[in-house]
Amino acid sequence: MAGTTKGPAGDGPRRGFRSAELGWPELHRIPRPPHRLPLLGDVLGAHGSTPVQDTLRYARQLGPIFRRRAFGKEFVFVWGAGLVAELADEARFAKHVGLGVANLRPVAGDGLFTAYNHEPNWQLAHDVLAPGFSREAMAGYHRTMLDVAQRLTARWDRAQADGRAVDVPGDMTRLTLETIARTGFGHDFGSFERSRPHPFVTAMVGTLSHAQRLNTVPAPLAPWLLRRASRRNAADIACLNRTVDDLIRARRTAPGQGDLLDRMLETAHPVTGERLSPENVRRQVITFLVAGHETTSGALSFALHHLSRQPEVAARARAEVDRVWGDTAEPAYEQVARLRYVRRVLDETLRLWPTAPAFAREAREDTVLAGAHPMRRGAWALVLTPMLHRDPEVWGPDAERFDPGRFDAAAVRSRPPHTFKPFGTGARACIGRQFALHEATLVLGLLLRRYELRPDPGYRLRVTERLTLMPEGLRLHLDRRTAGATPPPLEPAARDGGSAPRCPVRGAGD
Image 1 (cartoon, one colour):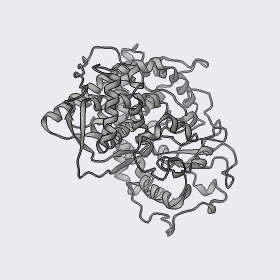
Image 2 (cartoon, one colour):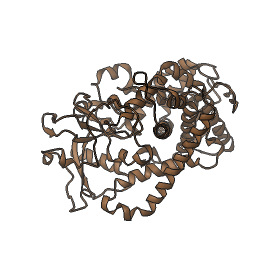
Image 3 (cartoon, one colour):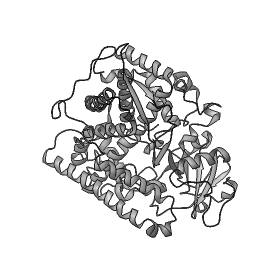
Image 4 (tube, rainbow, N blue to C red):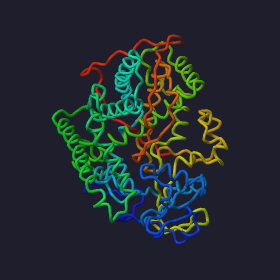
């Protein structure tokens, strides 16, 4: 196996799922739902397709730490701000690859997101790729992001001219997939030219949905109950592997684009001289293509939903875009960071709907959480991020209300640390944070400047879950702006011309 550097936990392998009673000696002190059923567990009122939303309901009833049991598996959930602050302490806790994430290992293996702490390829890949996530590299992605956004606005202009509503989640998925594919890997999926999603997207949604479904089926029965679904999942994984192998094969014949894929193929570790193995390169590419677009598309979709429902927020954000960008057809990289209110809209969206809705933490050594709950080494808890972001002790009694003012500079300074965690925490936090935030802020600015957003009056927000969260069935009507600083249309980028695409995402930590 390539690489020898230990991951952040620096401990031995973890094998299989560890039910909570194995690591929490006083588990009985943690509240659980009433009416637990023999064998089945806490499943009354639960639905297999909405486990996160079901768990949010239990969280409101049971408090900042609670447990659930399903089909012989016991889980501890944490969302109280003080408890999460302890779990965020890197000296005491490390990332735990929870059940849902572990279910993705057949496709992503020891990629950055799914690697266990003891697997050396995590540190190797992180050290090799981190220099590609500098501010200079970020500025290099900007041109490609604009090019892809032009393809989105061209599609939305046609829909607006025809009087058709736009499919927000579908089009945000097209946008973010093309952005990460072109900036990171020099590849064009042609998503905006297709009437149906690219097969890669269909296979990706299939693997994510299958991983989620595995969480809701008793493990001994899964081979029988999910026999047909497992065959479909194997076909989906084969499609993902085939697509990425073709992409890598093409690059080996034409290297030198200086993007993330070139780094994976050509860059050695600056200290050890080690390189990523061909198998690990495939896993990293899949990881970036999936994680690099799935969560951002959800965040943009939720943001557009809230903007369409709160015209006063949209008006203030639009006024900021007009003021900061003026008549500039294509905003410069530096101008995006100046959209401070638009960024607050995005942050507030991620507060209410963090599209990666949970992350797991495990104890590095025997410890006691909050002075009350003993944990053995390796014991883990799942941080329920949407409830952390709704903790009334931090966010107030109106925590369910959408209010970008919560992210004014003074408000941010007044809050304790570790209360806003849409990208996870610590050394294993999302490496793509700055990339995603720049892309999403740029796209919201472009769309607000160009369109008025009209919601369907009969639509009520429904959230679909496939490990990530996404608005379901969200469609918006558009009006082209006729007043204010309406910019000229973005110039279409030549399909094969312009600046070469570069690599994605940036490390962030907290």
